[in-house]
Image (cartoon, rainbow, N blue to C red; front, side, top):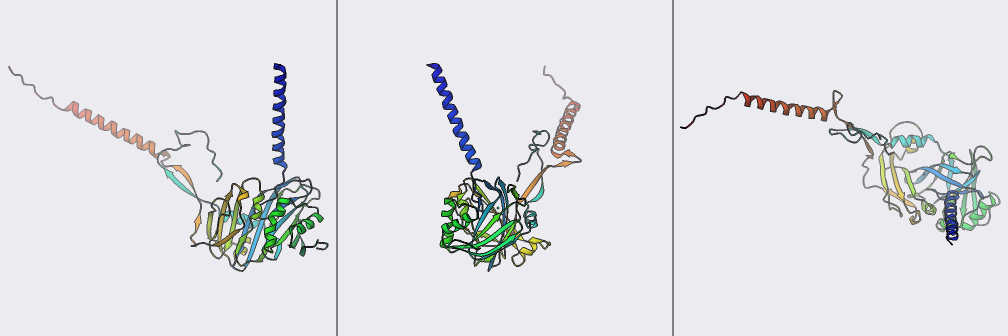
Length: 369
């Protein structure tokens, strides 16, 4: 009887382990359809994920531009990226140097800060751990209008209008992609608002190779009476999402609401310098740069797209990282010199007091008989 119980226990344990393994593998291979701005769809029985995304939005009061760079990974040798836009868009390749300049312009400022008493890492409080914590055409089915096709480097770009997500599904299917039901439902609000879609076929430079690495940026331009950054599709993500957005406008900008995420935070605000390059060219007519970060612990709570507005002031802001240093004098810790000096003064004072007491004449004793 005991042997049977032991065997049954092993079977149950093995079943649990296999079930957990299956769940874990399923979470690893499930395609992530959502990214911060748009949706990525892999080919049949393939997986693709957006490992990193960077976006900059420029708005001059009449026209909006979005430049986006995606870093992707997975085993897919092709994928489709769908981006909803409120008006007809033109598409061209962006300059990768733009994001290098943006990161440099918004980088935290390092300043030295000195402390008197030793802190962790200073002698004699050395712990041995000095690591610092590291501080987005022809043959289209009915309901879809192809208003433009173009080839941009490795991208095959189609600009579409759609009156029905099912029709968009048909167009994608005819080009080798399957529109997931969850994504189809998420696109319906854009169809109801009569938005258009930019559909981009992503493919690696070498045929048959997996689609991995950082892709060339895409630069979209469309008319816009107000500044909007599409975020609704991010609610399909199954893991927490982070938004990092650069905004170029005439003034400092802010989001009108949190749209279901944590409170947006400004990580940089200020006017773009006069340096040359793609950042200077994009900032012409919209010279104020605002960098915004936001966390979405529960993407399913995202309620809509980000609408941005002018902030109450153009006050500049930059993050400051303090580099702490122990204050020294002639290479020696100031606290140690102070302690030694204080101890020396104390010892000297005690010695002087002792000498004075030892050299003081003793009073004469008078006796009474």
